[in-house]
Image (cartoon, rainbow, N blue to C red; front, top):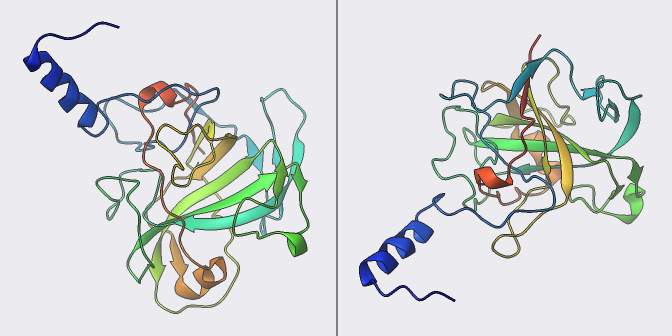
Length: 234
């Protein structure tokens, strides 16, 4: 082990490690989430543009058709859970996004921005024996997350939350999220299809069955990100 004799060098290194985002975390077996999806970022955060999505579905979105690759036959995945995060996890440049994503949030109120995740799996545990507000019902991959962010509106109808259709989308290979259980945690793989847009709404009544917001995981450093972030356009 090399010992640094210069106190100045040691101090600089310690500051670099302490600065948010300065130090890269250990790499993982699979890419991690969340990430910045801002279409206006310069330089662009996207690796490619496509007109073909990895998923096809229709409301009420109880299942999706997932293609691992464009030339693969579609695989049917079933709804296995839905939850939301406050603050949001994936950033896209919307007003009201936290400056430091990943900080713990409390109960939400009208005007807050939340991020809603609807999760699908190839094998699903019966909802009578697990909690669909967690990932406990999602038994076997591949796992696909349909995600979007929305502004909370007061009151409203108690209708099920259905992910918004349409494009543009951001899609990538990543991981499950939620707050890390320990520093540098590597989470299991998941495929993401995120509906870009800042004007979606969700009512307090719609969020109530989801019990409470999950804590948010911070944006992952570049050495943990996939190289397939795709902007899916009309």
